[in-house]
Image (tube, rainbow, N blue to C red):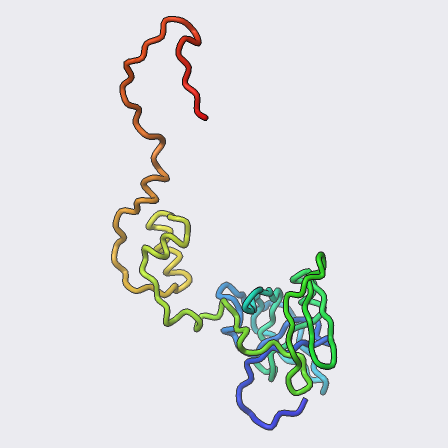
Length: 212
């Protein structure tokens, strides 16, 4: 691969020779990624062994579909972001078709086309427009109030919300205490009150209530 510029490349390159997904940018990994504790190295074409710093996963999204990248390795010394073709097919239960003017990602069970794109500079690339949806910078400018996070999380208790917001540094507009959540109150209610009835029955089946 030739490159006329040293500008930072954020594209993802499909590589049939790569055994794992690789990235040089730690922020491409999901927030719960973990330090890599193994002894393996990434061996490149010149024989050098590049150290692995972290392991995690991420998701690349298109206008119509999302694709997961499991076992994504953070290798700071690697120059590009690589998608292992074999690992990608296993992660997403898909298969790929490579043509001279296009490449396709198809669902393995149905054959439905999930992605149809063109090569760029004779390389098969997931373009930067398919940025990871878990990339922290994609939501920094869209802070939400705590009541919105309360709804997104399924109306948990305030203690759980504070714990998650603090642990994962979720972007919030303010730290004000939430008011009474109507959905939470309805969820906790057991039943509506019954009004007094003037109907009196003296024998079995003389008065029947039916919920149709």
